[in-house]
Length: 155
Image (cartoon, rainbow, N blue to C red):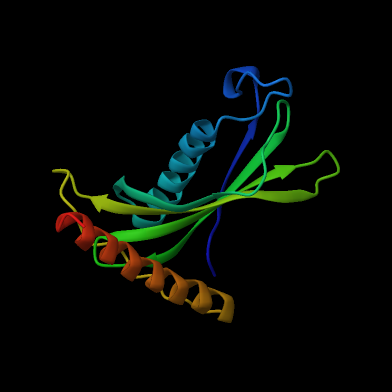
């Protein structure tokens, strides 16, 4: 079963833009995503990690001043030295209900003591849901690789 890493924040004035109804900066939630993804990856690999890319960062709705943000991160796929972490960001209401406001996929690479990529433990999906998520991660991996090839070739 996929283990989740959870982070909780309250949207404070310094996290917001200057609109009449202050809302959370996209860059702030991206920073929080990077941190919770790194914690999940470090716990999984028991290694230092670095972010390779964040893709499919989708903002579904804004978060506003004084709202509680709950982020859940979980490893969804592993390669030889890299792993994908999905981060779901949700607004948690005072009654405990949650609404998804953002989903991001973060690719991390594990590092050895010399800051060189090193092997990660393989992730083996068990449940049907985990298997589906793992297969989707494989599709994202191939898409990222094709984009990287295009960039290398100047397309």
